[in-house]
Image (tube, rainbow, N blue to C red; front, side, top):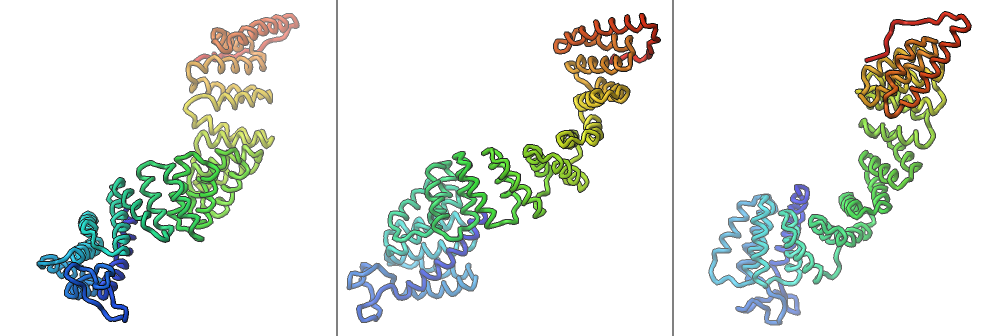
Amino acid sequence: MAELATLLRYAFRLSATLACVALVVPYARADGAPEEPDQAGASTKGQAVGLSRRVAEKLTKAIELFEADEFDEALAIVDALARRRSLRPPDIAQIHRFRGYILVSKGNSEGAAAEFQKSLAQHALDPFAEQQTTYSLAQLYTQLEKYDQALALIDTWFAGAQDPKPDAFFLKAMILVQQEKFEAALAPAKTAVEMSGQPRESWVQLLAAVYIELQDYPNLAASLERLISISPGKKQYWVQLAAVQNHLEQDAKALATLRLADQARLLTDDRDFRQLSRLLFLRDLPYQCAKEIEDAISAGSLQADADAYRMLSNCYVAARENELALEPLAKAGELSPDGDMYMLLGQMHLQRERYEPALEVLRKALAKSKPEQRGSVQLLIGVAQLGQKRFDDAERAFQAAANDAKVGDAARSYLKFVAEQRSRSQQLGFVVPQTQTVARR
């Protein structure tokens, strides 16, 4: 609303200048000579209501002071005029009106609104001035968050408007948005944008806000594209557009949007790079995903946490660079609050029959695991011990996992297998290596 107040002051200054210049000679005879009004305040030709010459002259002096930013001096003249006797309704209406302009310039919106109300209450302004004052009061009520009064006034203004400009439609849309009447706000918001060949950024922002509330995501995407064309250097539009495109399952478009923003060096936040990395992964570009994550971590743009390293590892796995996936997964395990990452790393070592490295990380997983994870970790430890023919150690690990609801059946099957392998080894006369390590927490 602060921006609105500033705009209002500039608009009202122009309005006050034009209004007071017009008031110096408010009506004329057919031959072009000024014509004095009668005592009722109307011209002898039945033309528009006008000011008495004395009031017009004083207001002319006040406007000169107003234009010189001497607001207090201008206000003193208007206040002195207001104390005069035998003022007619046209005089009173214009005095309150001009006082309103001065108060707006002094930052007194409440006082200005009251003056405009008093001016309109005289029902003595000419049609142009009445329309102008009605519009100004609607703007002030919007700034003062008196939206019901503002809407009533702008509707009154539209009823008498001959050629409403885009600004008026924007004002009505803004009032309706503040009242959370989003469906009603859509038409004036669209009209404001479509009537202007080069709409203001704030107008398109308001239209986008309406589309968000109405959950009209295709039109929201179009509005965001328009905002990007207006202000291509504003990162939030690119990121928001990518998010909307992703919601619409337009992953290719979302990725293209973010990559353009990245090339323009607009992406700066951690979440921006995470979103870009996820889209690269989803679009089957895992190597580019890995490169993006590594570069972002090195630049400090992406926090080097467990999720980042897990994504990096996943990208390398998807790119069939399994060896490169091991180190980031180990870092993810170190940073993770639970044992999930170490479990995954242990499984990767087991797939390659690297039993000692698997045991090392699985013991770390067991130390960090939640109660519901321990059975699964013990099962994997048992598999690693079995791979090295350490049957006693494997048996202890499988026994620890045997009562787990998820892996109990598998653990019991492994126990039978251990017994068979031990028996076979003994029959063949092999010496079975043992360790003193107990795979228990």
